[in-house]
Amino acid sequence: MIYKTLLLTFLLLFTACGDNGKKDIRVINTLSEQNITTPKVIKKTITIYIHGYSKSGYNQQGVYGNINHDIVIDNLAEFTNLPTMQNYDENSTHILAVTPYYGNQAPEYYTEQDLADIEAVTKTYGGGIPRYATIIAKFAKHVMKESGADQLNIVSASMGSLVTRWLIEKDIEQLASQKKIKKWLSIEGVIRGNYAASNSMLMGLVDPIEKQHIDTKHMDYEWINKNLEGTSASHPNYKDIQMGFISSTHDKDGALDTLLAINGQLQPNDGVQLLKDTKFSTTPNHTPTYTHFYQDHLGIKDDKGAWAGVATFLSSKKRVKITLLSAQASDLHEHINWLNKKAEIVFESEVSSSKVYEHFGIDESISERIVAGGALNLIKYKNENESKIVGQVIFNDFVLEDENELSVKITGYELDKYAIYGVREPSFKSSKASLGTVELNIPLENATIEVFGQDWSGVVKVEVLP
Image (tube, rainbow, N blue to C red):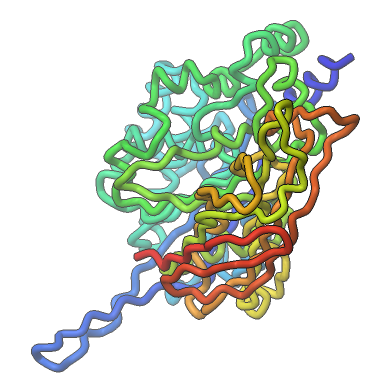
């Protein structure tokens, strides 16, 4: 039965991955009027990985908030060659850390006030997200003090991103207001809630099998909208934090797609999270990075391109945005008539980097926006040789400091039948016709570039952002 598959899938909700940086940042200030240079100012950074949901985590036994190991942080340490809290030394300028926020026993460093804070937040909210955020914030202060770190980066996965959001917006331990948090990268994050946890029909079916606990209740849209502020990064506590979002668009098992189809609203998703719920909407004063991969919710942890993206986000100051501004189709691959008035065209893209291969040995895409993911802009053409505004971001992220160009592949497709795009022309199966592929190395300098495919051409804009 269809609901059996849905229930089995959503009872396993969440858990993703994290990643981290490679180079420490050294700031040199030159006193030109005296023609001398000050000593290098080295800021020590702690990057904390905040894990995702565990089905039985809410009633887990053991110590929370202690310095711990995790397969993600251990893999990250190996990948970036950065030390963890277990093996750093006084010369370390970037250290990795992780702690469980599940558990029922306080760590040894807790004061009476810490214990009182945990008791109070648990009593007020029943535990869940506010309790976990308080545990993480206290852990952050502890490891910063112990290591002598000046600033904090956060890499969060799945429900860990909702924990992070609460920590920042509620200014737990004044980490945000004191400007300790420099970067936050969310991976497959429960930023704006979770569709399945917010679906009363599904939760009603799950409840008799397994009573829903505090974690799933706190991922409900209604609870989040009541207790947190909005769906954008407009909260003042985000002002000084560089944010980034890594999201995926492959529902490998099809369970969430099925639930969406039942409700008549197919949307891009990763099998657990709707794409729109994994990131904030943009605001004029805050521009997070956005990177897509064609992976499912758990598969992202094995995507080496995503690992390279996290390392670069945390280590680099060089940010690039590439946009397909407009496109002209010389052959619509569609018979236009009074019944079929327009051709529906999308533009798929993949980005790779020779420097990422040179630094990390990774040749996988560092950004991919795939037709099947359903997240491409659907452009409707009425006539051949008609030029249309596309406005689709191909890449919007940090690159390695020595990166001078990115390899970009763009393919145009005319869709005949594709439910997730709402294209339902008479056909027995989903189909698409290629308009040709453009492959080029794009220099990373402000410019507009004309590109030419077999049956289409377009204009690409490159921006090196401050």
